Length: 385
Image (cartoon, rainbow, N blue to C red; front, top):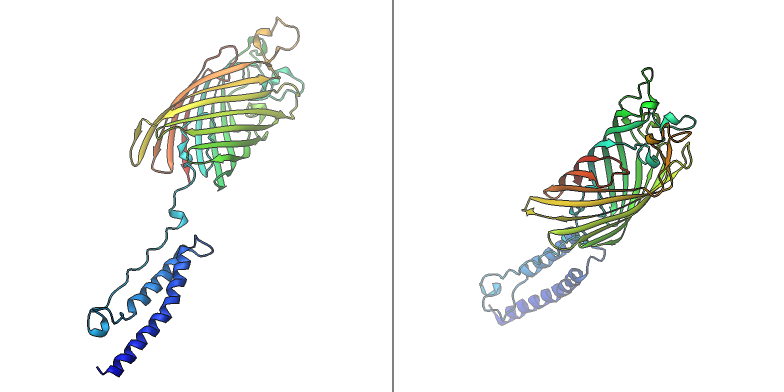
């Protein structure tokens, strides 16, 4: 090769490098930006183009193995695409991080939940109209079932619940309950051979809708405000509803103490609105705490026993006390104000994969003067999205 040809060859190389340098600097500036309007795919494409330009550019004359001298052509490694936001770790725990079965879940997320309850030994079904409306045996505007004042009642409830979370701190809730009741016994003075008492009933109960808003939402902790409204959609004359609206604000708490141990809690109030018998329904304050421990953990399955202490305190309201029949003149009404109910719940949640879990639990009433039920069995399936 003549000196003149070599001179032109080197000039073309320098011109090509000069044209490539701005492109390289521009690509590096794009790759250095933290997702300012460009997607990960676009960054990867720019990086690939720059790598292609660098790989096709001739080597400098100082390279002893340059393509111009007949040596192998160097290939610059392609720039690794930056990880997308979808690949990054979420700021909050998955909703299945909550292990409780009776306390409301503080973790916000999208889910579908199917829950089945079987309660036994409800001796005060119209207590403050929390379970169902005032016994129709009182006459007048009392909207509950009749004839007969139930003194022992079993029930089953199937809850179909959906929760949608457009944001990690906000979700919307809808729940459709189906209720089935079986009265076991009645106050003798309220039934007769001609009117033996109302029979088994079943159907849609009072539906609920609301939202959850997390004031704190992190991997380790959730502090969540929940507001749920319940609508009198159940037939109160069959014992399927309360015959009034209810607004229930609650403060929910979730704390992941360690990799295996969690603590959850709830404090809230169920406030009645409207109804045919004002003053019979009362405010019911609910509170509870539930520690859980993951006893077994693998890549796909984990098993966590949980113990929950749940209590209710009633402010205002009344109920039909069969013990007053024939003793206290007039209707057998008794005040529900100041009544306390405390239950101990024990159970376990089994999580399968990242999206499914099953809960099985049993609850027993610790108080005897007032109860919602003496015993309860709960089975739950939860699928998260």
